[in-house]
Length: 400
Image (cartoon, one colour):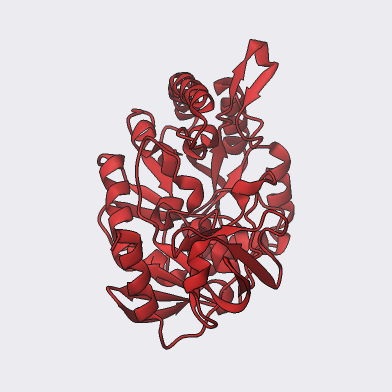
């Protein structure tokens, strides 16, 4: 029996009393992935990206481990909810236009001390100020560095279109704007190098493209390390008491941790290890989060139909955004139908051994987005469900 076949047998035994569709997290794999992130961070604390987990119980579990400290959230409403739930040190990773949320933040000493908001434009400071509604608490602010690699005099850009603050001088200019405004405190600097941390460099069957990606990423790391160091020096000249410099992501943990200017690493997807993180030379994780769909039809030889399955991930549309049938091994989508809204046909010889009601296990393309489809996660240890915990959705929250 292969390791994957053994996992399938365990998961089937563990969830025998539960009807699919369902989702689980294998705690042994989750914990092993957490330990590997800490190893790669080499002593620098890891701030957990909540969007990649979206389950309070699992956020609590990983933050209880040595090597993890703080949360990187994805909306202001989520940040406030986590802070009220007892989580400390919440960094909102994206600018917000949530006026009601800012009013709540500025009026509550506990929230204001716990949550740091992201800014990359004076207009965002203006919006926050106009949203205070009388709240007098100091708002903690983090600036975001644009990490993109620019070539040929800026005519070629590699990296996500996030912050407009590319140069150390631009960051220092905004830092001075924050420092001049009463009611704001500049406490952090962040830069997410998605073109390194979020792009696999070992694409199956595409050696030339993989080599090109590795060359690009090596150049990007060198350029960013130098520019980020200069940016930190420029911002610290304005705000000497800067508390943290955040960088990285699951795919670049060890590289970002090696930069002297960086004080903490962001990571989250590496806990669940979805399918988009299979194609990396920098690390190998264990798939920890899976979902199961039930076989409801057997339309012919070498084919079964499962209920549901149309769970595409965000990003540029393409086959890599679809979940993949994982267990039993050897199943594939019908190319004419893909993953369906209500039903999904699957092809391959393993289909002939599946019966009505059997479970087919899938991996999502991305990490936390799986939790937008399920109210609960079944936590599995060995071949037993030891707990069933709500996702954000299960607690009544869909923040985006």
